[in-house]
Amino acid sequence: MAGNSGSLLPPELQACEYLQTDGNCYIDTNFKVKDIDIKIDAKLSVDNSLTGWLFGCRISNISNQFGVVYISPNSLRYNYGASANAETNETTNYIINIDNGILKFTNFEGTGKHTINRGSYTFTSNYTIRLWGLNSPSPENSATMTKLYYFDFKNIGKLVACYIKAGNTFIDNKSVECTAGKPGMYDILNRVFYTNDGTGEFLHGYDIIL
Image 1 (cartoon, one colour):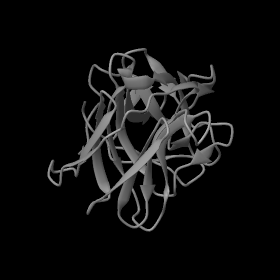
Image 2 (tube, helix red, strand yellow):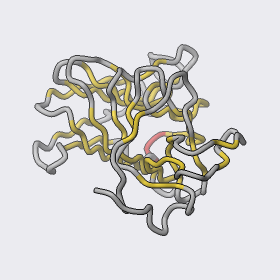
Image 3 (spheres, one colour):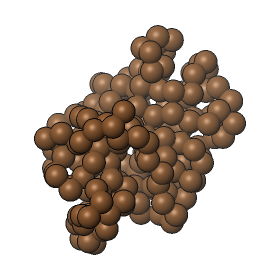
């Protein structure tokens, strides 16, 4: 579906359906998480033959951790504090909601509902959330083919997939002037254009109107 980006984005940017990693792309956000204040909505899809982190951060894999992992061929694991609980499912297309420390997900059609509880654990992390991976002392990236459509960290930041339109440039979160065609995630709350912090480059989906 073609169209312009609408009023939510600066005129230099075009909204698109998703960004897709080649396995080496990721974005380190400015978003820090702390205990059950976390409220997140996200839409992602994965290759069911590949295991990898979708988003997260942690100080250690024993206690201070937060993140979501796809485990091939059919499980979603939620790491929270000292817990790591998984739920078997039948989809590779996820709409994820995290509220009060509880993760719920469905497929894109809103069916096949699952819930993963956090237990009684709490945590803090000095690391910010990585999209398409895990931000930690030993960081990890998502698997090839992982797509992110949007990432809404309620009242903190709302990121949507986009790219720079032809004939334009735009300054990214690293103060780099990026040229036409550069893909990224634009935070429509904080007016920040996040671009790839890894190697290679994101692929993007078709144009959409927000």
